[in-house]
Length: 324
Image 1 (tube, rainbow, N blue to C red):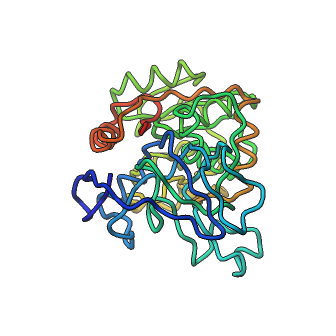
Image 2: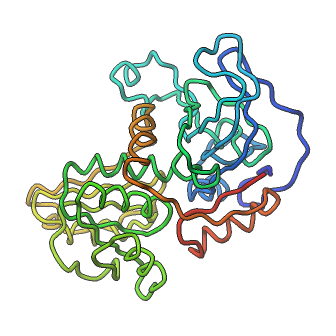
C-alpha cells in the first residue's frame, strides 16, 4: 500500500521485490502496526518523506535473506523493526549514545520504505530479535507505541502518580508497565469519552476523566501522547512543583501561550524524540516480565486506509495492525 502524494489515500501497487544491501535483512512481513505518526506522514505534516512511500514502522516478520556483512541474524529469525531505521554511527550525537538525535538519521516508513507490504528491507542494526510468545499482531505495537511509551516514562524520572494524556496505543502499553512498577496511573481523555476512560480503568488506571479539567490529585509527571498542544498548559496545571511534563509525540499542534506561573516551581517541560537501540532492548525484555498484553484490531493489508481512518477517529481501543 503506497503513498504517492501527501494528503491522499494509499493505493495498492505491485512493486519489484526489494533487495537487501550488505548491511540489511530482507523480511517477510507478518504484521505491521498502524501508528498515529503514519497519519502525520500521510497528511504531509511531516515534511521530507520519500515518495512514493510504503508507510509502516511497527514491523514484525521473518528474515528471509541477510546481507553479506550481517552478523547475528539469519534466515528464519523472527524480528521487529521500529521507527528509527538508520544512523550514521559517527556524529557527535551517536558518539554520545544519543543516536535518536542523529541529524542524518533515516526513519522506517518515512525515508525508508516500511511495513505496509508483504516484504520489507531493514538495516540489520535496527532489526531486533523477537523471542516472546506473543503472536505477530500483538507484538507489532511494541515496536513504536511500546518504545515511545517506555522512553517517555523513563524521561519522567521516578514518578509515583503518572497522568497519561490521550489513551491510545502507547498509553495502553505504558499503563501496564507503570502499574507493574507500582505507580498510580490517572488517564486524561476527551470530555465524555467514556469508552476510552473505561478501557483505561480496565488496564489499571485509578482514575479517568476530562483532559482539560482539574486533576483529582497533584501529579508527579504527565505523559502527553495526544498531538494536541492545548494539553501542555493543562498538564502543567496538573503536575506538582518539581513535576515533569513529557511531550511524547513526533508532531503536535501549536502550544498556546500560558502564564509563567504554570512552569514556575521547578516544573520541567520536555520532549522525547524517536528511540535508541537500548530503548528497544530494554522494552522488549521488560514487556514479558510486566505481563504486557496489547489490545489489537487487525486489518487486511488492502484495508490500510480504513485502519488509518479508524486511528484518526479514535475508534480503536489499543492498536490497529495490518496483517498481509
